[in-house]
Amino acid sequence: MRDASTAPADANESTEATDPADPIDSSEPADPIEPADPNDPTEPIESTEPSLAIDSTEPREASDHRESMRHTLAMTTWLDRGRLRADCSACVALCCVAPSFTASADFAIDKPAGVVCPNLASDDRCTIHERLRESGFPGCAAYDCFGAGQRVATGPRTPELFAAFGAMRRRHELLWYLAEAAELAAGALYGEALATADALERDAIAAEDVGRLLDRAVELARGGPPATDRAGADLIGRDLRRVDLRRADLRGAYLIRADLRGVDLALADVRGADLRGADLRGARLEHVLYLTRSQLGAATADQTTTVPHWLRLPGR
Figure: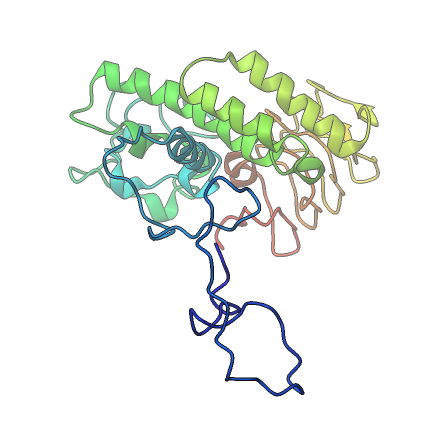
């Protein structure tokens, strides 16, 4: 289409450029403009229809691209850590009923699975929530459902609901790890993490396959294998203050009551590590890998303990 800003103002005016210094002889009539030949490819053809007009006589199919965008947006929410945080107000106290307790350093009483905790009020509120640790229930204080409770809490508490709660909690824990894997190594595995989360939501992938992706993300973040392999190691009560645990593999390690004061755990993988009672005062955890709220809540930390930006120190 011809640019309106350069089109002649008068249909009878010549389109040839003139020198503004030359006088215009108005005594000679201007040459008539011949109509454009539609068969001549050198002739510009101006459409009489608006350029943005839509022919409503031709049906349009649904946009696959728009549907794909909706799906992609849904996928990104699966790695939203805000969605993986417990909202007790939207639950039915499943964590106070579904799991079993064994009298120990973590729980003051025995409680079978599916039985209501005696500290639960009729309005589904914990009567000792503000003093769980002092009352002998540090296990409850550290517990985290990763937002599974509010997602499955529909209807009365039944064995089927308890089973769904347990399965959803395991899924959400993996999503928590995937959210971190998506960010490691400058997001090198973001697309794969997103696709894996999608498969996880559809029950189309095994936990072992998710674990392999998490391992790859760690290797990329470290730039190679772990500096120290202490996976599954018995480090209960050990003084580790002078041990270099940077880039260590601490998956499933028993760090119960271990002394980790001031220790730098940068790029150490702590998936499944038992940190109950571990002393993390002054520890540097801002670059530790796959730390959860439960692990942090089960340990002892203070205001000098540094943590990843998506976590908060207990009591803060």
